[in-house]
Image 1 (cartoon, rainbow, N blue to C red):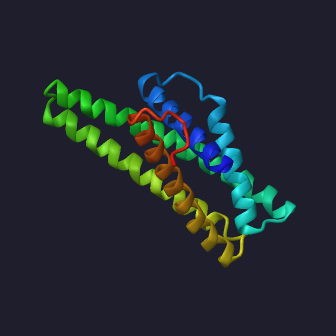
Image 2: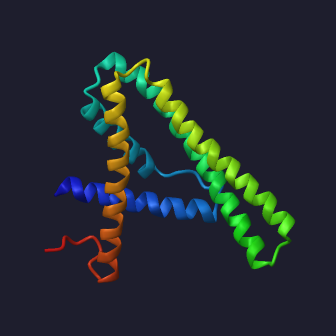
Length: 165
């Protein structure tokens, strides 16, 4: 149960950090994102059964990948805000088309970065480990989303952080 509470707590902090990042792009990330990253690393090591040498090589690439993904995600957030502002201000179709193009290019770069990462670790990990990584990442994200939704429902019903029976 403590693991569930930790997951929920970390995810809520990340969500709060994401919203504040959108509102104030210059704010540095807090330590909660680091805690989630550490948790993810531990889970990956366990799931893929990585030895020390493989783990060191893998996480150098993983860190670079995560930094690229965060940068591209921040760009997507900024572009979405720009598009929304243009829509609210009844912006010109020419400007909107330009922003849509930029958004699509950034989104493509986001997906290409992921593909490049997976292809790039195939010289470090076995095929089975790459497959486990793909499944793990998907399950990890879904579990975080689920916990966040459950936590949100608890807040809506006045149960802030209390365990539900």
